Amino acid sequence: MVCGSERCPLYLAEQVEFMFVETEVRVQHRCNGLSEVRLEAATVPWRRLAWYPTFKLVAEFVLALFMFVVSAPIMAVAALLVKLTSPGPVIYSQVRIGKNGRPIRIYKIRSMYHNCEQHSGPRWSTPGDLRVTRIGRFLRTTYIDELPQLWNVLRGDMSLVGPRPERPEFVWQLEKVLPDYRERLIVRPGVTGLAQVHLPPDTDLESVRRKLTHDLYYIQRQGLWLDAQLLLCTAFRVAKIPYRGLLKLLRVPSPEVIERTRTTAAIEDDAVLHVQLA
Image 1 (cartoon, one colour):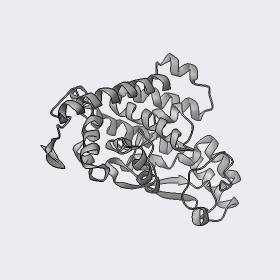
Image 2: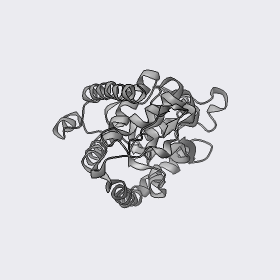
Image 3: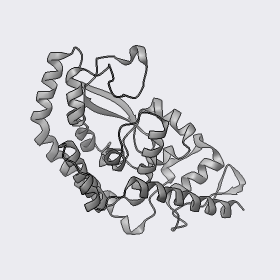
Image 4: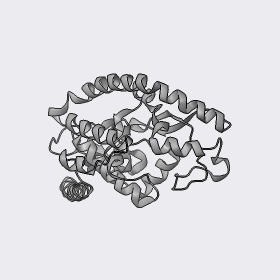
């Protein structure tokens, strides 16, 4: 199989089982250019985890349904407070980029003033953001504004655990400066994830790069135990219970380990690429 030209061979990860998924996509990046990457060709090659995607889909549907029913009264009270204190719709929807680059619409309880981006344009929220309402600050602090995304999990657009979905306005810009950015789109985006457990919200390009490293580490090693670890740590985080000790107790990979592993994998991938293109 070739990519771009007959002199540039492309060996799929499915054919070379010791290669990780991102190796295949990175070869395509460097051979064809980012705009020509076909994410549907990138599939997780681990034979021993072939059962997990289906299991995860079913298990997360059951868990999300339970959480949606239990949290419905909380969402109803939050929606009422938003309606009484701020003009505009209660539920805020926004287009994000999902699996394989497919646009999805996610839902939140509105925490900002209605149409606040008409003048500022799309931008990340920062500490002390004046666009956030008084009630919205409470909703964001308690993560109540994120609860409607359980509906996205029930629809199959999102997972409970996975890389957070990003807005298309940012994705197109970030993939120009972070060549591996689209690799995070080979799985369904999540309500929480490894990056969310370890790192604060994005504020600049460096924070995005660090989260990308965590997302790719998760994609390579996703499984029942890691997902269970992240869900438990997220529950502690939402409940405002210190969980740093829990991270060590459960042996959740630390940011230092994640960064070191990713750097090593990149070096190995470059060596494989060099051999293939020689």
